[in-house]
Image (cartoon, rainbow, N blue to C red; front, side):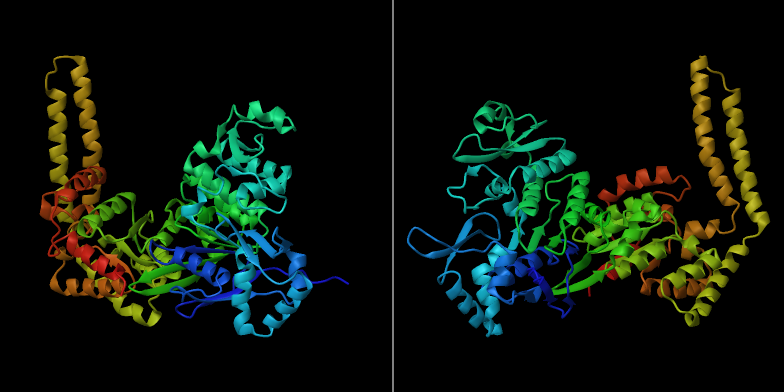
Length: 598
């Protein structure tokens, strides 16, 4: 008859807000710095490895699936006790932090111990502490950023066949097949292979080289070849950290792996790779929980699986907030060309996100936000157009990220698009009519700019352009090269001038450049109605008109030359003294207050 095979697993754990998570094989904690991600791993490790863990700050309780009998546990894991030289029954294992061996002594093995095990199970309130003390550290691997660089450093060979007091000893005991898999994975990621060097009998270390496939089987014959390759200990932090994680996952038979910041010391493509490898290594025989600050790690995981619990942790004051995210929805974001290029997922790792229409907007608002408040932890996303801004704001709301969309005044010039944006923000049909009526009133102001007035402005600009062309054509030149250079410069100027001319034909142009200030009082009230309703849902309409009108009070006039404007603006902003009484600071004050935790 088949017997059930025991698997050490977390059945559930509870966060300090009461949220209960029943994890599957893989869990990813994401969120801004100092939100509680790493603390969560430490507290889970404490609950599972310490008989009397301190009270959790982020994680309040952990529930483990324990074996029903000692025999069931022994069949599943290598937890045999052995007589030491003093005649004591001792259980030896590498500790949870994988840095040193620990030993636990106990009753005669196995029959008397089985009776003790059974009796402890009759006291559930004490059994978790008993199991954590006796076996917990052998069931959990906790890879911290602090310890990971030391996990595969040179160390002693095992002194007897039961010893596994380091990861390198585990790799040695795992055999050549495990070593080949590790080497292949490292070569795929870093372009270099690794090999375990035990040619000196008392020492284990890893070597790094191009190819170790031709090494002699006898370590005495391999010694000279090994010494021609550099030690892993002398390599960069990235490859050492990567090798430590991979060896732990491939050689340790443990039920729970806790990995803090697997992306530490890695470049983005390598972070993506470690995410994919972690996803490949999660299965029903082992649970993996990671805490990461890297969208690349998350992308790597989602490239391999949707069977993952993604939990965003945020912190406001002394309170943590948790959001359980849908992996399929996040994968859809990755697969959406626009959302992927906008790097929407990066916002998961910031306290707040600003969603803007274009790259120049993102650069300006980021620079101005830093100038106004260096303490703000904000990510600015280029949505590529104003229609996409509300969609991304809503996505961030779902993901538990405080967000604010920023759009120019001309978002009001298309009734249908405005209605769609309002609906995306969650404004119900019953609240739409007064907002659409306000839009109609503003649109009416735009129509009141008579065509003859706009045509007169075009006529003046055309005359100016013609005069400049005549001047360049008729003036004498000292050489053909000078003439060519001057006329080419004029043609480049004309491109910008004709763009301005085209914009001036539009009825909305005056409003776009001057914004709310160009409206009569009744229409200003209409604008305020729309602005207030949108801001309440995280969308802020620029009252100054457009980005290129933001610094008129600082001597940079509005223009259609966005590239030239942003260059001047980014040079000016660092020297400005923020003044919340005028733009851009007044506008940013409202945005920042919306993004500040309450």
